Image (cartoon, rainbow, N blue to C red):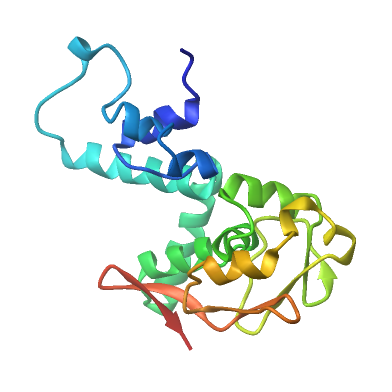
Length: 202
């Protein structure tokens, strides 16, 4: 049986990253059927994990979770470090703020799509308007007060059928508001890290 590369990533990280959408919630999930690292069992490395290895694992997890390439992450981190030197702010909070406030991530958080990859593709195909203007750049950063709507031309797509019931089932972050009658999402604030939790920045 040929295993999907995304499933191997979850097994390697020993964590469900929900990269395959609905499959991750079923009994077909690789983390349910084979909850151990990929490879030949007898050749798997054992022993203590070094600090460098732990940090590398966390970096890889971040890249996979948000769909970033190595160059993208490096560029993002460099910009954040330069900004923190001027503002004396927490780099981890700034990183989370930027990653979470990208348009594709917000669409994923709204529950329209089962994975960030699918949400990213939908944004690229022009499914959404930001402040009544079409935006097809998944990495576009939104700010407090921005509004997101589904493009009228895409409303007939199958994914948006029974959208109101889908949103009602979705537990939205405190910093995102969705108005069902107008089918409009509004950014109430931006998330940062505080004691390991994401909170709203007013």
